Image (cartoon, rainbow, N blue to C red):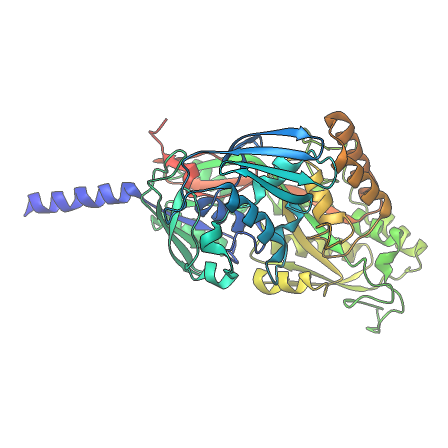
Length: 520
């Protein structure tokens, strides 16, 4: 009997070594890799699908499904595909699949944040032969290899006519990625199995249980109890304790996600969640006044949020990216918190007694998001504004934000490229569906000077000149308080001590980046 028990235990241990259970803190809203440009969705997409180019853990561009690329004319890029790559159903990857994918991206219906921003520069796709594809761009466009790192390549035969619901049901959740689809329960978990025919490095795990656990305490408790092997978005309140706990290994990396406030720039005659102190609607939107926007920004003590709310897991910021990133503006520091100066600006703008404003935000998407908006609400109150804070579940919140329902609201933006062109295009470029600009510009900020600098940068092939244009566009947008940057997150993961993690600056949490600790 003892021998049988030992055998069973040995089999259990062997099985466990092949399986990985992960708990992630953000909702996955779709398995359709072209539906919603959202980091949790993209993390999942990179487990099931591949892109032509990709970024490594330090945000450096490297080959993906394309083994090489080059400029053959000022407006023509040629990409060579890896030979022998197959989709999970056995279909070979060809240039026709790439052409189909590029055509599909802008046509996905009801997309809350479209991936079309990454394909808009392409005027047409030329299939040269089964492994060679050429992209003809409307103008010179230096960022095409970067942009294509965000576009998952689909199988024309399988995905022609497929809907987002078809992906979510698993019917067409078929890619070339390191894992295959097994099961998806929205809001609960995604189950995967290893793709043993994968063209790249094989994952260490035969099966992956990718659980969605938005409650911070529940993720930590699950790790400590042994119910899960790995968690992301480690609660900042638990960091000090976990670092000392020999049952846990912590991995950290400076991130590329800016947490910021978006403002209602769209409405001129009042804003839905701003009233006078008597509760009556105002006849104009105070957020149209630069002095008011500066006052709102100046009232916030970012150092206090970074130290007390984020407990050191954030860097206060006055722009999109941290120092060292391409397009970072030297000397553009965040305003120092100053309630008295904010009151003075409000008085100059005609609001000596302030006004009433509701600050909206999610309570289950970003690290400490509910606590951040509570802190900002208190800072605004000290500056003379009657502030109400309304935190909502992400799925409800982001739908309303996408419909421009709010006056002031907290959002985050993460980029994999570490270049300022990404947030500039998505967050502050004037919304333009045809160009794919402003896809996440939910406050509908618009400044022709920013647009002109950005468009010039996107045509400039000289890196030094392009960076200068991006810096100028960033400076204009920040001086104009197009958004209110708060801080840049630090990415933190925790796991069993028998595991190690290839931590990523872009914060993606993926099973292929987790390995047994003894592995090289």
